[in-house]
Length: 166
Image 1 (cartoon, helix red, strand yellow):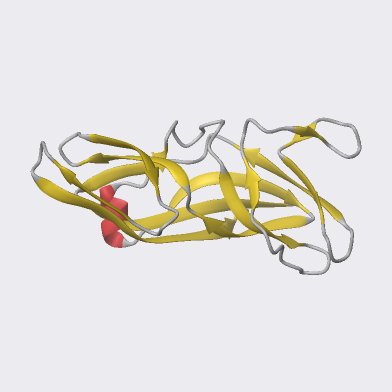
Image 2 (cartoon, helix red, strand yellow; image 1 turned 30 degrees about the vertical axis):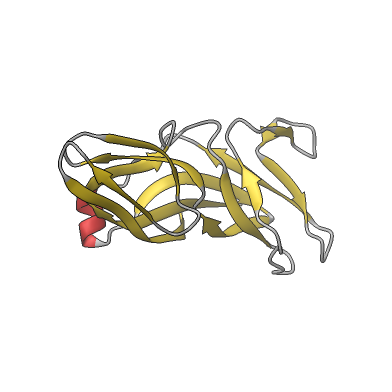
C-alpha cells in the first residue's frame, strides 16, 4: 500500500486559485491518468478516469474503492481509492515561486497512477475577483481577457507530479 499525493503547478498570469470546478473535493471531477502495474511495471496504453463519486466493491467484498483494474500484461488486479480533504487551490503566490500544490490523495494497492492529464472542468479567479469557470486545460493552456481588470489572463506551463506520503 502506498499513498500518493497528486501535486500540480502552473504559470498563472493575473489569476489565482486554480482548482476543479466544484472545489478540490468535487465528487464529479474526472482525474485522468495512465496506470502502472505494481507487479510487472507495465503502463496502460489508455488513460483511466477516476472520480470520487464512482465507487465499486473491493474484490474481497469488504468496503468500496474508486477503481479496480486488471493489468492487461500480467493479469494482476489492483485498486485505487481516493482520499478527499487534503487538496487546495493553486494560488498566484505558489505559481510565482513554482511551488507545487496538493490536489488529491490516492491510496494505491497494486496500481500506481502516472502521467496526470489536465482536462475539462477547472475554475480560476482573476486577481480582481472575476470568476472563470468550465475551463478546458486539455490543450495545455488557457487564455482570456478580464473585462473588469482590463488585463489578459492566462494559465500555461501546466505540470504535475506524484509524491509519496509518509
